[in-house]
Image 1 (cartoon, helix red, strand yellow):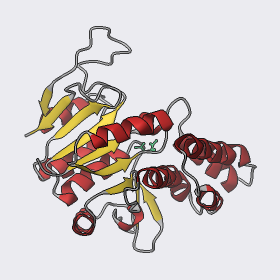
Image 2 (cartoon, rainbow, N blue to C red):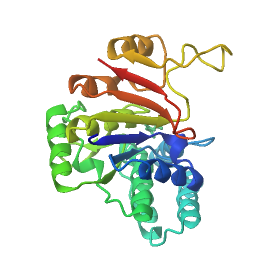
Image 3 (cartoon, rainbow, N blue to C red):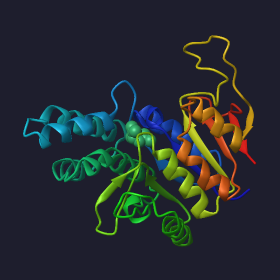
Image 4 (cartoon, protein in one colour):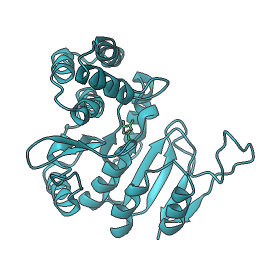
Length: 269
Ligand code: ASP
């Protein structure tokens, strides 16, 4: 078929069982070659802990509870997966944080490092791929060129979502839930024929299922229609993730990690 880029959200990376599920999904199609991961989520989101950790440090308060909670989360993930040798990286990354963005990005960074160590799929740091201006604006052309170069070099890769760097090497993050944007850029840059966005919902719903028990899955929608749904409050996909794939004429499929055989929602045209 061609290259498929898969992005997995925080509930899909929440624990070792979900990591197993991701690997099963990747094994089901050899076209799923590039994987973008969010930081582990679930009831407590690693990214929230990291922001709190940084906030406390910046205010001169003790942030060790948050730091240790994140370290424990990754230690448990490694132990459950049988991954060894990550302890030094966990401590180095959490103790060496320099800015709020740098701190927040460590969730994605460590998640992708653990996944790479576990699967043997090469790790590529998003700091080397996603480029921002000094004022924080994404440099789309440069970013796409870097993904293109990566794809020429590596047939497969696991890439942390949510962040990149500026020309000084400082980490810059997208807005919250921005790993969707990394995934879309990866799809456009690698010349993918499909961008799969995997999460904990069955696809785009006609209404919020928490509020409306009659909410229905929408099987397909145009990018234009999806932008309208986003503007009306649909949260399934970050709105800034639409342009890179729409411009490159790549369809997006919204899929549910726990039900990989379900059709999901197709966004195209
Ligand atoms: N981990 C980040 C967040 O919680 C980014 C993402 O998951 O897309 O917002």
